[in-house]
Length: 163
Image (cartoon, rainbow, N blue to C red):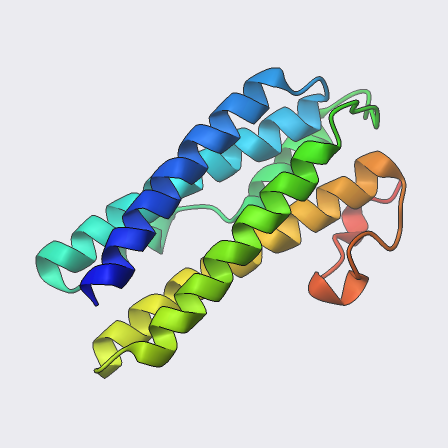
């Protein structure tokens, strides 16, 4: 369990840094919003990990947090012009690989967990990584105008992005 907690804290911390740096360099406002939203969620994951360490609880912080899709949809609908141009598309591949790595590590720790509380915690983190993968795939598909990026079955398509 100690190894899993250490990994989770470092992984989420690195995620915050990654998304902030890449968001600052992004040219597309939708990419910026997505990456800043993901950075905020990585901070929330860090809080959840700390809460789990201290109290064994991690779920209460989610009560008033909006999902990535909700945040992006609200932002997307507020835009007068919906620019699809993003020159730094490789950051999406980097981000997707990072999130997939996190998912597989959390799955490993889930399988190694010795009690139900630990299993539920790592399953929760797996679910969070899954949502980030979905968001990355959907926004990338929109800005690259590619309908089949990294296998559509990996995500639930955000049809509201279709113009």
